[in-house]
Length: 154
Image (tube, rainbow, N blue to C red; front, side, top):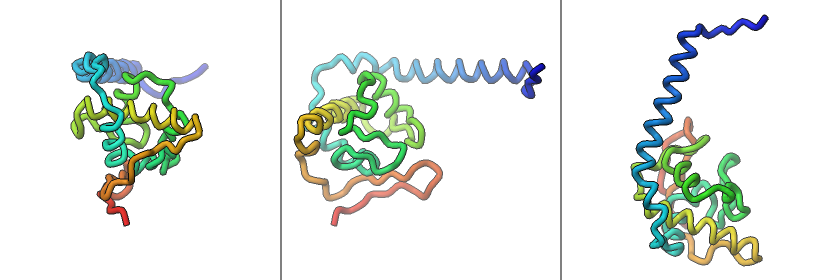
């Protein structure tokens, strides 16, 4: 006989929290879902955004700087739809914090488009990045470590 150490009432509360939490996230993200169908995204704008805000973890050439960060040039996570990737960025995933209030949806969409361009370039034997590394870029520190910071290129 297996004894469940969590009382039934606690199990119900946990399930309700999970359902309500999912609904709240779904409602917030649902508000921007229609923007994914807009064709005005620009991979070059996405390159600027990726290099400034994302490359500190995901690498300037799309090869991850942290163990848990995907290497987008290698195609990591790119089997997911743009919608799934957008949710991951906005809500956070694993050690990555949520970015929902940090940049606009169109900026995220442009960066996601650029991820796919990097992977295509890499798989065809070209360097994944065409643009130079920016003078300043965001250096993310995984959750639980010291504060994030901006880093100067030297």
